[in-house]
Length: 302
Length: 329
Image (cartoon, rainbow over the protein chains, first blue to last red):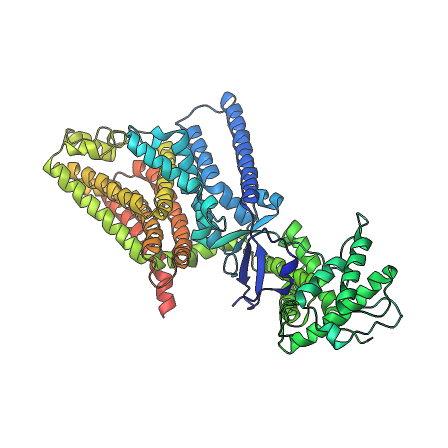
C-alpha cells in the first residue's frame, strides 16, 4: 500500500505521478514526463543523430574525392556499418553513457527510471532501445519507402500496414501514462528530474514576544489540509507585493472562524498567523503521533 | 509556548546531512559520478539511506508540506544516483559475456527452442517442396541470394560456388551481410510485440530458404560439401537467427499467455532477457561475418571446414551452458 505523502496537496495536480518503492522499502513519488517533454527530448537526440550522420557523410565524401579509392566496396561497407550504428546503436549508446539520460533528456530535464523502483540496469536500457526498431524505424520506412519492405504489395496490404504503423508510431499517445513500447518491454518510465528547495522552518518563533495562546476548541477546528494551505500562504514569495494583502485576508478569515477576541489589527496579521500555524501544527502533529490524521476541517476524527 | 516543535527539532538535527546529500547529488547530476572523491563516494549511500529514513520518519511526524516534498524529492534524486546504472562499460561488457547472455538464453529456452523448431520445420518443408517440384525453388529463394545456384545448375557450377568464391569483394560483402542479418534479427525480436506472427513467419521462411538451398545440392550429391561450406559461419549465424526469433516469440508469449502474472509483468520478465539475447545474437553475427569474409575463401579443405564448425558449435554450447553447471554445483 502506497501511502500518499502529506505534501502532495501543494504539488502540480496536472501531472501524472509514478509511485515506486525504493529498495529501502519507502514509497516515493516521481512526476512522469509529459508526452510533449518526451517528444522534445527525442527530437533533440534525433537532431544530434542527423548532425553526426551529416558530419560523417561530409568526412567520407571528402576522403572519397581525395586519398581513398573505391576499393573492393570497402567504403560502402564502412558506410553500411555507420548507418547501422546510427540506426540501432545511437540511442542505446547515449542512454547507457548518460545513465538513463541522453543529451535530449538532459536538456528537457528528464530521465529513465525503473518503474518498480529497483536499480536501473543496462539490460533494461538495451531492451527499451532495441524496440525503437518497430516503434520508429520500421514505421518510418513503411511511410517513406513502402516498396523496399513490401514490394508489389496490394492496396489492402498497404492499408493494413499503414494502420499498423500508425498504431505503433502513436502508441504513447494512447497509453494512459504516455509510455512507449520500449518502456513496457523494459519496465522503465521516463520521469522529470525532480527539483525542490528546502525553505526555512515556519514552526520557529523569531520574536521574544509571548506567543498567542489558543484554546483546544480553537485548535480543533482545522485539519491538515487547512494547515498546509496556511503554510502555502506564509511561504508566498513577496514579488508582486500581494503577500501582505493575502495574509491580511487569511488572518481575518481565521480570526472570525476562531471567534478570536485577542489582538485584531491587520498590522499583526503575519505574527498572528505564524503563532496560529505553530500551535495548530503542534496540535495536529501530536494527534498524528497517536495515529489520528485529521484530514481537513470536515474530518470528525481529530 | 516556547518549547520547540518535535518536527522542527527533528529537522534541525538532520538538516546538515540532507544539505550534504543535496550537494553531492546536484554535482553528480551535472557532472557525473566521476566528479565525486573517494570519500564522497562512500558518504553517498550512507547519506542516501539517512535521507530515506528521514523521509519515512517525517511522513509519520511532520505536517510541513515543504519539508515533506523536499525530502521526497531529495530521496528520489539520490535514489536515481545510487541505483542508476553505474557499472563502467568494461565491467558491463564482461558481465554480459560471463553471465548476462548465457543466463538470458537459459531464461528464454522455451521460446528459443520453439523458434528452432519453426526454423527446422521450414527447412524440412523447403527441402520437400523443391524435391517435389524444382520450380518452387525460384519462388522460395530470392534471386539475389541464389545467383547461379539454381536447380538448373550442373554439379560443377554448384561445386565451384562452394570452393572458389570471388576474390576481394567478399569482406565488404560479409560486412553488408552482417549489417543486414543484424537488422533482420532486431526486427524479428521487436516484431514479437505485435503478437509474434511476423516473427513466426520470418523463422519459417528462413528455414524454407535453407531447406530449398540444401535440396539442390543434395540432388547433385554435394550434401557434405554444402555443409562444410555453410556450417563454419552458419553455426553462429543460424544460431543468431534462431535466438532473435526466440526473443521475439518470448515477447509474444508474454502478451498472449501471461500465465499467473499480469501482462505488463510478464512482458518485463521476457523483455529484459530478450534484449540481452539480441545483443548476443549481434555478437554471433559479427563472428559469422568474420568467418565468412576471411575464413571461407582461404580455407578450402573440407576436413578443416568441419573442424572449425565443430569447434564453433562447442564454444557456443560452452558459452551458454558452462555458467549453468557452475551455478548448479
